Length: 129
Image (cartoon, rainbow, N blue to C red; front, side, top):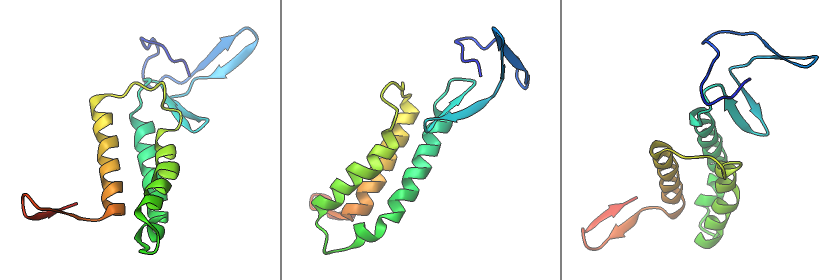
């Protein structure tokens, strides 16, 4: 796969790149060290995949989060050490768009809502999640 600022390859063109005596197949996308790299150099598919996998992990831990014998402090520590690390792995150099940032915030709000449960708002006299 060639990753360039301007894509000089035409869409659906599958071929080979040759460097010295080595021949490399041209790919649209592939996974390297857990990060999905694609031809357009966008983060959308990687972020969606990370949110999906983190949601699965969060639901695996749901029995711990629903257990009343475990303190909220420990539940939040589990969330921070397991699910947050899965979600943000190898994203230190990723430039997030506003839409990607909103997706991450939405996932985090859902995770906190599932762990902490509903909260009573005394000013508005209602429950919020």
